[in-house]
Amino acid sequence: MSELPNQVPAVPVGMRPCPVEEPERPSRRESPLMNRVMFIFVFLLFIGVTVAFTPQIAKQIAYSWNIGVERARADVARQFLDDNSFSVSDQRTAWVAHAVAPGIVGVHTLVSKPPEEFNVMPDWRGDSEALGFDIGSGIIIDDQGFILTNYHVIAGALEIRVQLSDGRVIEAELIGQDRAIDLAVLRIDARDLRAIDWGDSRRVTVGERVLAIGSPFGLQQTVTSGIISAVERYDALRIIGGPRRGVGSFPHEFIQTDAPINPGNSGGALVDMNGKVVGICTWIYTSEQGGNSGVGFAIPSSTAKRIYDEIVSLGVVRRGWIGVRTDDLIWYDARQMGQDKPKGAIITSFFPRSPASDAGLQRGDIIRQWGETEITSPLHLIHLVTLTKPGTVVPVEVFRKGEILMFDVTVGSRQTDL
Image 1 (cartoon, rainbow, N blue to C red):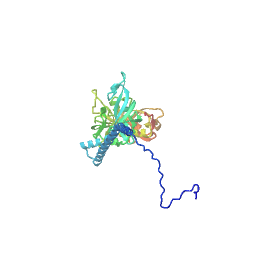
Image 2 (image 1 turned 180 degrees about the horizontal axis):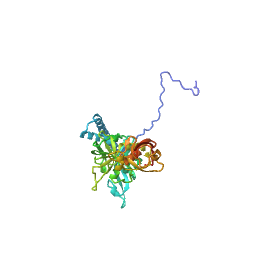
Image 3 (image 1 turned 90 degrees about the vertical axis):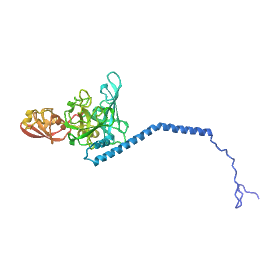
Image 4 (image 1 turned 90 degrees about the horizontal axis):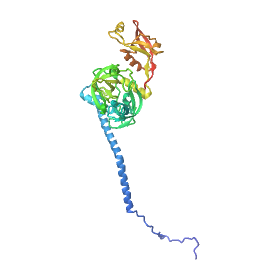
């Protein structure tokens, strides 16, 4: 019986078909030489990456360590100050210095100017000018990177860098400046910043202990101690010899201190015994022999905070203006007013269409009071007017021909110097 085509032969149950043996394929065997070459390549690559990134890793570890130690010290110091708010001792001075240290920075500027004006050794370029780094100080006001310093610290800077207390050096951006009051705001892109709290300069008193912290002569984190020697010094620019390095001669209030302030301290903090900023160290009076003479001046925090807030939030500084020229009182004017000593400011002339003339003030009027503040001198009046927001209506008390009169003056706007 013949099999049908394509018919598969039946296999009895219990029997398995024999597997068909496939031809043996030759196995791939890797060369020992190739393995050695790959191992050497991977090893050299690892060494190269390690060498390339080790400095950065070490630097980051060092920064993190410094930041951690400094923050721990500052936190302990702040806790001590909070728990012992009324104690005054040498120990407290040390705790204040530790508490505020992370918020004080050095400000390094690359500038071109006459070589005798440098605070640090410049690189010479030509006979009359040098290109080099100058050094000042600054205060971290906000942990987002905003820093307050003096305008004259960054005036004419080609490049600005900030050195933090933990050793980091970061390029800074100039946000805004107020040449008349001598303040500037910088910003850096950095993490782990510790800001210093504002204090109230209007509450400081003569004889109160303060610390000045900054970078005199480039010496980072230098702390000096002293007291408040005087407040409401409106004629400090005249005492120290007038405006310097392009800074305006606009009269404003200063705090006087005997805490040593030296070149490089400009822009640093004057702090009270609670570790709060009450002033921005700015000028010193130097004798003919040079050096610190125990007479230093700081911009009060009440003024500095207002300027800082307006630069950051508005980009401009608004100044009040009433359009009068004033002069000091003489003894005769004081006697007419029943005063033992001259106080106030006498109007000598007006600017055309000024807010003061529109309000009814006249030439010869003696301005005795601005709002609720008694006027002590013409410079005092100018300071108060300029810190008043334009558009504000201020009651003004004047003495005119034996009478006390009241006028409501709508403050105008002075051209800014930003």
